[in-house]
Every structure is written in structure tokens, then in C-alpha cells.
Image (cartoon, rainbow, N blue to C red; front, top):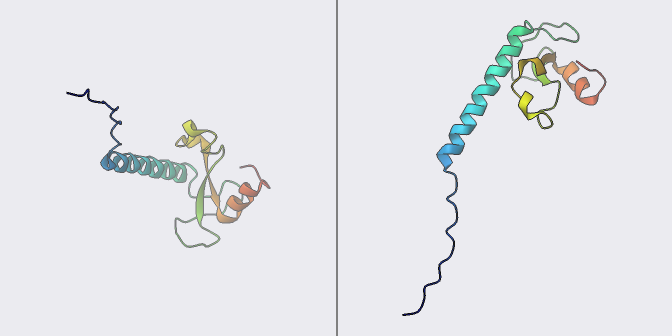
Length: 102
């Protein structure tokens, strides 16, 4: 009887349900981060002082949560409330252009 050739068995792929659960947890953490920043900053832009509202519409008084230190370069600070600041749409655009430092 010829010797059998054994091939290594590949590791099983992560299950889709595990990835879905991890994404749901990240979404929950992101929502809690945004809510905490909105509450701490009293619904006002921290640069110009404009009162903001939560909306998906692209209007001047739309509030956007900005990370002072980028999420990619500082992943541990991604959900740190101290790394977030609430800005209006215009100030947020200027922050990304480097014109202001919130």
C-alpha cells in the first residue's frame, strides 16, 4: 500500500457571524463616542460657537465630530472623548485643510 501524502490543513476562516458581531460592537462604540462629544460640547461648535443640530442634511449648522489626532495614526484614541471635538460643517472643513487647529 503506497504511503499517503498528508497536506497541512488550512486554518478555518473567521466566521461571518464573528465579523458581524465585531462590526456591531464598533458601531456601538462609535455612537457612544459621538453622543458623549455632543453632550460635553453642549451642541455648539468649539471654534466659532454656533449652535448645531444633528442632521444628515448638508446645512451650515450641521454638527460633525472631529478627531483631533487621526484615527489611523492613533487607533487607541479612536473612542477617547478627549480626542473628539464638535465642529460645524465649515470649521470641520477648515480643520481638515489645516487652516485651524481645534
